[in-house]
Length: 189
Image (cartoon, rainbow, N blue to C red; front, top):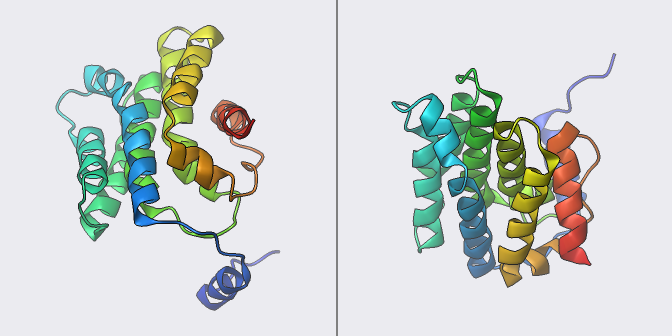
């Protein structure tokens, strides 16, 4: 039975992994893009659970970082709180909207590592927002395609530049993973 790698093993792996260039300005631009994507579907969560502020707070924290704030524990925790909020609604579209908000806050914690999983920090909010819109439209894939086209058209230069330094998005992740890989491929083309 495989065992979970120890913290030392994970640190050694990170030390061996190739590093990429990543400026703070790029990180702020990427986080702003992720917040824009998540903000477009926030209403889907708030319609389902109007008294739960966690996804909105995650987007606001991402915007504060985008605007010059620091990467703080509070920012990271707001992202985790939005992911926890995704477990609450009975409406699947609302859950993906909350996940998009969690990814918006998480974008600020993109690591300068040449690891395919880092693509999720960049495009996770866009992929979950597309899935949220699709679910809200009773599974209409054209709605998801429109959301992904919007993300493609509004991706700032930093998103495209940093994606070019990373391996392609990883396999897996169901529909959201498909959207992530499709958007990744389109932005690299």
